[in-house]
Each structure stands twice: as C-alpha cells, then as structure tokens.
Image (cartoon, rainbow, N blue to C red; front, side, top):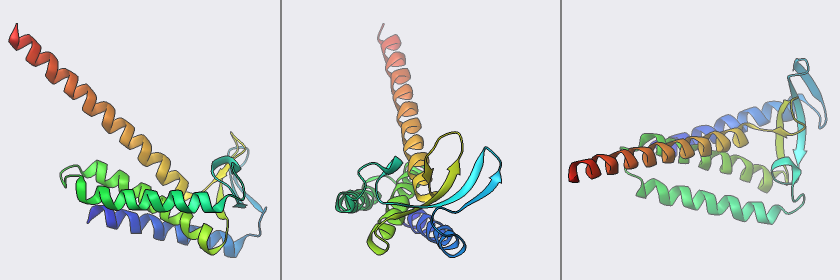
Length: 159
C-alpha cells in the first residue's frame, strides 16, 4: 500500500506544480527566486535529462512504462518490512508516471526548477527519481556493509 500511496502522491504533487507553472508562465519565462542561485523557468523539454535525445518520445514512453511495470512487480516482491525500499520505488514510479503523463498529453515534459549552478532545468518528478535512486544506493551500501560485518563475525567465531 505504501508504494501505491507514494507513487500517486508524487504524481499528484508533480501534476499540481506543473499545472501552476503552465498557467502562470509562458515557455521560456523566468522568475528569479534567489538571484544567481535559483529561478523558476518554464521549459518544455522534448528529450530526456539535459535535453538528450530530443524528439525520441516513444523511447521515453516505453522506458517509463517498463519502469512502472517494474515498480508494480517490486511492490509485490519487496517485503513490507523494507519500508525505505518501498518508499524509494514509489518515488521512482511516481516520477516516471509524472513525466509519462507529460509526454503522452503534451508531447514534452514540463521543467521549471532552474538552479543556476548548472544550465539544466528539471522538475519535481525528476527530483523524486534522483532522490529515490540515491536512497536505493545508500540502502544497498548499508546492506553490503552489514553483510560484510556479519561474515567477519562468523569468520572470527570459526577461528
């Protein structure tokens, strides 16, 4: 249930934020929030991250559908006790769903988060995917570290 709630929650927040941007900005318009640090800039992105593979919508639609199917599969395979893993896959599913919606309805993804330290604009869905992948990497690292510690203890007991 957690995966579904997170996935739908991320999608709703993403839709709401994109709706606000689309109704209050015109493409290319920028609102300076923190000068030289953070702006809101309305961009319609025809590609993937950083505008890569512009115009290849079908590839991103297929990829998003595969991710969503993977999240649904994972929802049934990951034990309920692994709450952080379930949270992460819900975030990934919601992010994929948010950008999939844009591609299917608009033909491009609505981006608006514009940190001035780099020249790329992204959105809430993208952020959820990146944070979730980071969380999964941390969980894998933590699990591997615990397994090595357990193996070391077993080795010490055997000696």
